[in-house]
Length: 427
Ligand code: GDP
Ligand code: IMO
Ligand code: MG
Image 1 (cartoon, rainbow, N blue to C red):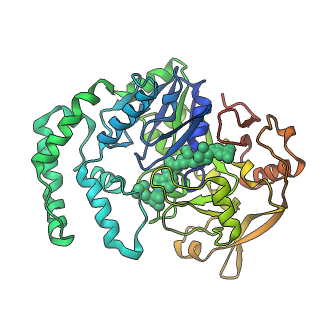
Image 2 (cartoon, rainbow, N blue to C red):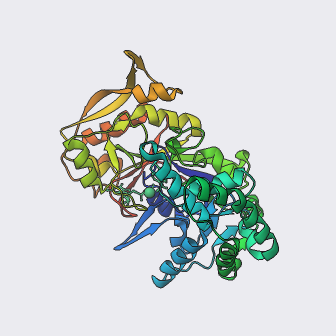
Image 3 (tube, rainbow, N blue to C red):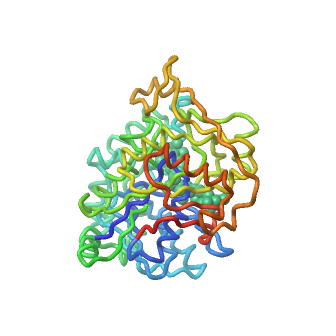
């Protein structure tokens, strides 16, 4: 039962798309289990670059069946435009399966996301504005719309009515916005139904049968561990569970089926949106990481905040996900620094702390304690094996591995599929 989970070990944008695509050729199913089109996963194949938001990165591997699990929130207009965009580029998307239990991001969820952020003012989360939080809120409040509801007009109408009942009061009386008409929303959603219908399936059954038949299933996380609603830097998080447990609930596969959990780990740290970030740099080094690493959001185009590697966070990711491996990405970006600081612990109110504090106030006060490792200047983008790396790059990787609590089984030295050093096989 070879089921693998591949997830972000930091605050997202670690290179999950590239890693998933790399494995895509050897797996039978790639499954998104949470999040929605807040994700931006970049895949580079030869001279072609793809930015995937809602679709699993396995969609670019012809032998692989891409699956959108029940835990994902689906914006139907984004889904259809992403599919047609890929079709225009010659990618066959006909194998896609979408859970009938996945929740729909409705136009009013997007509106609520935007007005809520505006209302929060300087306390805002810095969401992607894609309606993610409000859609998950509706799901938990039991007033959500699911993919299967698109195929029963009467139920759909009743559910949209129920959802808008309270929302319209809030929109008009609190936020000073116009009320949203039930009929208009229902009409828009029904307009997508026929185009989506061929993809809708009982994905829980499909995936469990696949595992029973020894097929290889890869669960591709969106966002990252520190953006997890339970285990991240709440409230500066997303509204789902990118951590490993989310793969089980978000796809309907039991934890006993998961054989490997791979944490994608950037060789430094980035974050988009608001919230604490102990190793964030506000100097020329931060600028250089942003420039050399191309650290600009795939979904929103925002500059990413950049900082040094944080081993406290990596250890935390190992623990809450039960990581079996790391895939270290973007090591090439660090080429050229004479010395590379790595955060090994925090200082909080004068005390050295080795592990991530559960207290939000403590984390906000955490100051990084750095150890400095010697850098390298040789180009590493052509390295094919660990021994091809300069000694100092090898030592940097080994030091990160020792601090982070799980073996580094692959290293990214460039954005392309083949710009990867494989140390231990994932399959
Ligand atoms: P994701 O959201 O985790 O899939 O990551 P993003 O696609 O948002 O951001 C990662 C960026 O780094 C993308 O532009 C990738 O093409 C790029 N990338 C991934 N791995 C590597 C690597 O090892 N080296 C370099 N230089 N770029 C990489
Ligand atoms: P991938 O999958 C980085 C961040 C947003 C914001 C917070 C909440 O590409 O790694 P949301 O719209 O989800 O309610 O926003 O989460 N965020 C991401 N940051 N990478 C992502 O996805 C993200 N998806 C959401 O910037 O801080
Ligand atoms: Mg991304």
